[in-house]
Image (cartoon, rainbow, N blue to C red; front, top):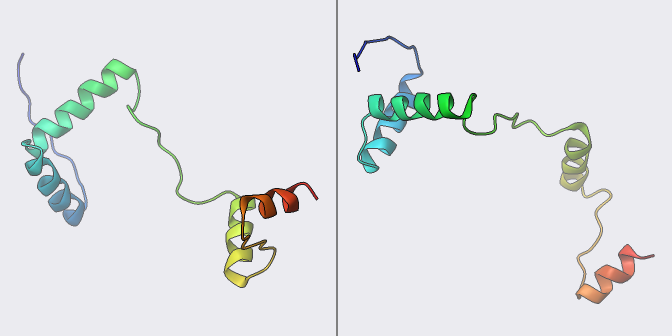
Length: 88
């Protein structure tokens, strides 16, 4: 199989961290990228979930409430106490 060269633009810090990670795995960056591309072809897409790290509105409200100490239940002294509160 013929090899070709390609250029990609990535963040310098990301590249450095990735090179260190892959070196620990016994790989160079080119080999790791080739593995990713081959897996993508086999999966007919990206071989892992691509999701937003931003929480949805319900989760964001729960986080904000918890940070303010609002709408927080517990702590409970036992599972029984938790269940009693849940079933109330």
